[in-house]
Length: 627
Image (cartoon, rainbow, N blue to C red; front, side, top):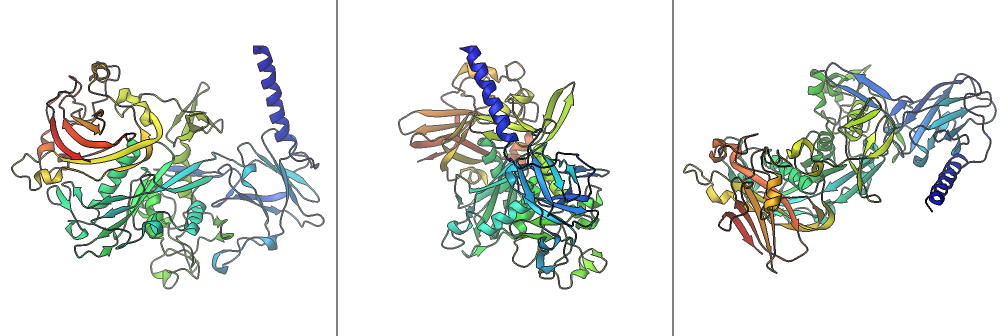
């Protein structure tokens, strides 16, 4: 039986090879039949780039950009001489196949797509055709054939990636769908905007959805001592001491939501539109936005225009490009696009020049603020005041090619080889539901490989590489703020700044955890001696969350957060945690708990050195909420 199975597998593999190599029966000239007479070949996705891609080597930053797999790709071909007879063709080959997957006729130069705002044509000599996404793969070969010659091009094709963009609106201080903006209107970007987002990011697929939580309603928030005063409560926009403190808190909350769902390392970005009321009950905008650089989370307004794309750029890992240019981390002068390759938008079927188009909001008098090139205003990067440089009707301006390279690197990661063993650092993990495995991209072999889940750094950053134990189950997301300085006589907020925010129930993930009622589980995380000895080394393990359900059962979790100094889980309480003027005195907990039963109560317990003993019945309850 075993031998039969092996033979069957070999037959199936042969059939797969045959099916890929004989997809098209029309005869074409084989690769490298005669010298290539094409004088120039370029490929177009978000930008016009050569087959090998682009690369930059700056004093303080390197980057590179190549094609992504499984994405519509235009090929541009210029020939040395005139093409006299039959129309030129391209044949696309997959891997080592001897017959092409598809043959396409090149369009003549007069059929080249236009430039935005009826601008100057990209080329008057380029033949072009779009290769459908399914044929754009690593190790592909393109044979260009004219009436007189043929030749090959091997474009550098990388990962076929997906970015999952989730929208999670925050309705704050009494804001709702009636007195601010309707949830149904802002829970997703407009459909045209979603297309535009895709056209600006180096991904194969963009999956945009409302976060499973839907929205969060926060009647107030607690702000840590960070902007000239102690920890305080904000109940309307006028209560804020400074402009960005609430946005900072939102990013911290989003970080907790991503972390408790095991999404910190995955191909997942969360954006929060802020809907808020002032002290008069009027809806007011946030006045800007904020993004966590490389943290794949951002917040701002609900218009999904310049602020959104800028904060999403930060989320991808992009800095302010003007500052980066001054610091030798960006190649184009003052954060402009002078030197970038042209872009292209397949949704509008237009080339995007690096110059400000005549229909742009900022075109008039742009010479007063923009970099100039031969009397033309050069677009600014979206990361440096570029909002308004786009053609009329578009939601935002283009990124330069260099930015796309950074995004691509942060998606793919970096693969190195040591004696044939590949090591992948960075990059985002993709979940494969067919195998129930997480995968990462191997840049050398140009394929997905399974990711090995492990307790990295001896548990310092949690269990299982930060990935979930259970996926797609009913969970309640609990957010708690604890004011550790409430007992200090000089504290102005005291216990009013220890709160359990309104909980939300949705489909989510559950992380592996330690149940402090089980001595064997506790022993695995005992500092320095347990099987996972650094689990509590961040700041100690001094807190426990306890959920009681209406049937009397409980879910109890030791939280790897504490009141100690870094790397001192057995030490004394850090003085800064009881100082009302220190940001260390306010601690945010974001935890998913099972929601397969009706919830009765949530409690946050103070359990100093929770790894020393099982949970005591008389543990101090810091805050509780009945349901």
